[in-house]
Image 1: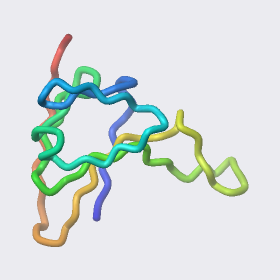
Image 2 (image 1 turned 90 degrees about the horizontal axis):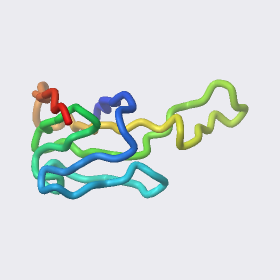
Image 3 (image 1 turned 90 degrees about the vertical axis):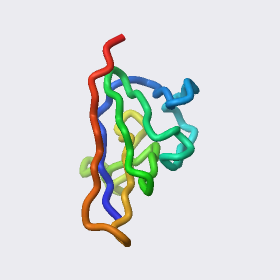
Length: 98
């Protein structure tokens, strides 16, 4: 499974159906179908492959801490894509101005 991290763009995202999800301590693990096929993150619309999942928070390894733990401000929003049935995915990124 591959993970595509997205740079921080906003403290929340908007699903295709208009629902707003806050990027806080609450974990998110949603399929493309759960999101309606796409989401808007800041001014970026991300159209996901059917088998991808959106996950939050993905905490990176922190080389400056002895135990390697990271805090929420270092978290990334990631698209998780399994490569069980395919060798290629298409993700469409579209600029969505306010």
